[in-house]
Length: 302
Image 1 (cartoon, rainbow, N blue to C red):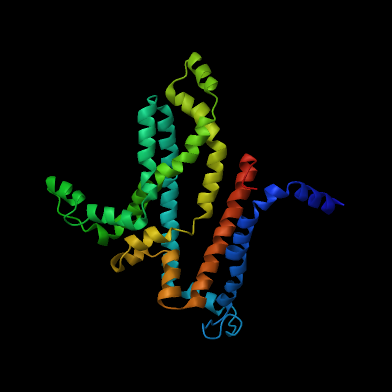
Image 2: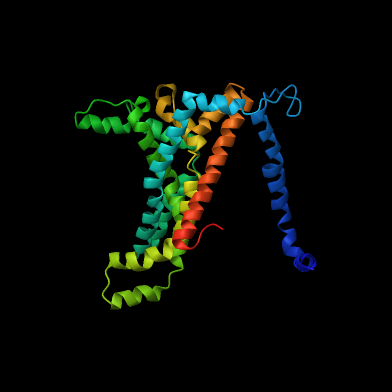
């Protein structure tokens, strides 16, 4: 009886539901059907024999994977870079959105906002080229250091500089764009709350603390959960374009590790096993973070 009611409701709203069909079809074709390819993580996969003709090896690929020292280094680098981004990159758009909301000159406010999210439309190839020129031996940064009598620094080969560089470039490229969602959330705050705070004698920081931040909390929880869920994804394009063989001990992450073994070395089963581990860990982190969030705040992603 309940099923008939649901079908009747779908038929009544058939025009709206039909608009979902293209998205549903794409989801099935590109997200669910390819899942059968995970089978090769448990095989010694050969292109000539295909998925159903390759011999099964069980968990042999995973055993080899967890014994590989380079895999452990890739995990360390991935987690370290993402934790740094979580500490520095995540708050940056929030602070930027709050500062923009405090501007009273509309023209300047719109101009700053437009300039801030412009780098989002640059590809990582362009961003890598820009920072490569800035940080070159004869680049702008080393010229400024030379004015103070400091010898040129080979930034591209310095281990200590790679992780901060990922934070700096990530913030510069995506900070303004990510701030849009917080700016939208701030626009929904009732102006009368600020007026009442002015009457009560509240200062600027008090209004931010007691009005602005509480209004942002629902959005913050969702974006924080999604950021935590990507703890094992460091961003392939950014890392791959900035890394080089001299700093692989700090620049090799899971995304580039899987790419090199899967495509460069043609170890498809091994790379699929690594990718499966990465996805499962991300999924487990998301479930754990969402559970903690629901128990502490009463709300989560589901």
